[in-house]
Amino acid sequence: MKKLLMSAALPLMLLAAPAFADPPKGFAERADAVRKSSGAPGMAITIVENGKIVFAKGFGVRKLGDPTPVDADTIFVIGSTGKAFTSAALATLVDAGKIGWDDKVIDHLPWFQMYDPWVTREMTIRDLLVHRSGLGLGAGDLLTVPRGSLSRAETVRRLRFIKPATSFRSGYAYDNILYAVAGEVIEAVSGQRWEDYVRDHVLKPAGMLKTTSDNDVRFKVTDRAYPHARTGGPVRGLGDQRPLDEHDELGRALAPAGLISSSANDMGRWLQIQLGHGAIPGGGRLFSEAASAEMWKPVTIEPIGTAPPLLAATQPTFSNYALGWEVRDYRGAKIVWHSGGVFGFTSVVVLIPEKNVAFSILTNAEDVPARFGLMYELLDYYLGAPKADWPTRYSTYLADRLGAAKTAVEAKLAAPAKVGPSLALDRYVGTYADPWYGNIEIAKDGDGLTIDFKTTPNMKGRLVHYQYDTFVAELTDKNIERPYVTFALGAEGQIEQVTMKPVSPIADFSFDYQDLLFRPVR
Image 1 (spheres, one colour):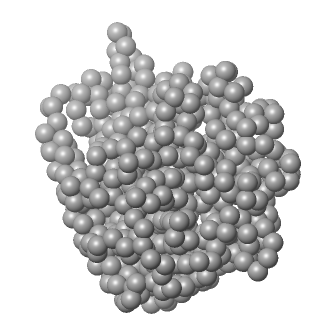
Image 2 (cartoon, rainbow, N blue to C red):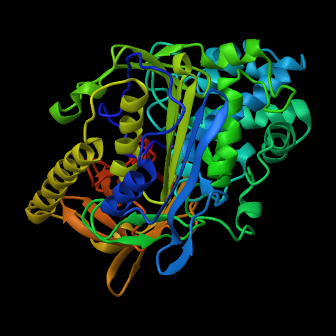
Image 3 (cartoon, rainbow, N blue to C red):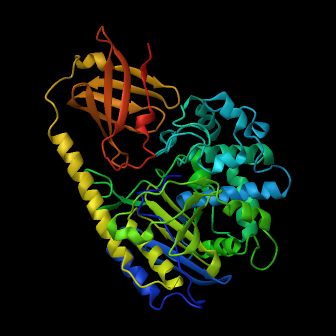
């Protein structure tokens, strides 16, 4: 699913260090201090060393305004770190001889279709998992972000209308929607919904009995964390921390990309299995050693940006995407890892295979310092690197980034051209359709124009004129990034199309407004 605040500042790489029998001295106190300073209400951390869970603890509270503490069994939505669970589910089918990683998708899902017929024919199960399809960054996410009304099958069916950004297998662009296709493949082959197959063939055999792949089940669990975010400022990430509607994280169609919920204790089981290359603690196997090797094998080269000076040490020399995992280096060591984020929850899972060490950090907030700051402190500890105050570095980096974005947004909105709109407001009223998203409806009341995104429940608001024939959609739900909405006129003054883009320059890529092209429904 989406990776909140993804940037060149989040890479990895590591040096050799002696074997450790315990986490860093005083780590629990340090972790809680970082959580408090970052503003995250709750957090859960797990560390596994040499096959043993040596640390599994909850911090803070499940929800602001409620003193109930997070414990080691409190479940958090783990976001895109859940992609590895979908890959593991596929691995069990590979081990059973029911599919192969390089099977054509259409051999198991005959109705599957991409925009390009050749890509439709050539797309393999492996291609679904490694972000080299030719789709643009986050393409199709708006169908389910922040919530969606479409089934998983219908979401996948609409892939045929999303134009590629590049040629097939020519480069890397992170997406979530193809993991929904993987979920449909699992259902077609097994006869079970992705949610049920993952429960029966991954979570239960792994002994992860608190973890759930089904949101309906999650909402019935008392010991669960609630999502929080800062959405009160001109850009997301500024303002006071506040609880979000917990039904807003992600439409369930994209659950295979990031809607698993897990706890510190259960993540310990998952980390043990990963470091054990599929072996289950106590006996048996979740997946074969061969499948483990396939899931960690680099496939798609990821571009490496330049990290800001404060975070320069985090910049890798290589970075690749495998099957639901990223493979990078940090200070000379190979790291198998993934970060995750959905509205109000963020996570990171890190494996250091050569040290036989792994850890996970789950939070019920979107603040970066707790997650990535502690991640790099643990990496430095296990790799014998000098101590660095990574949480403070990330706090400074984030403050600079948000401040620059705030200044840019305020400057733009403060000085529009005093021109337009070209038409009387009644002329903008109507229904407009995009082939993959569906309809928006523009209406007029006594206060002006309104907009309603019909595919996304309760995504509506007011169109406030900005300049020319561009408006800003001031949405009622402040959890949703607001877009510019631009009407293009034909030679006779009729509206021919409507395009959009996010107002915030740092809006999460899942708000892929720029991919929409609406035309009037006449």
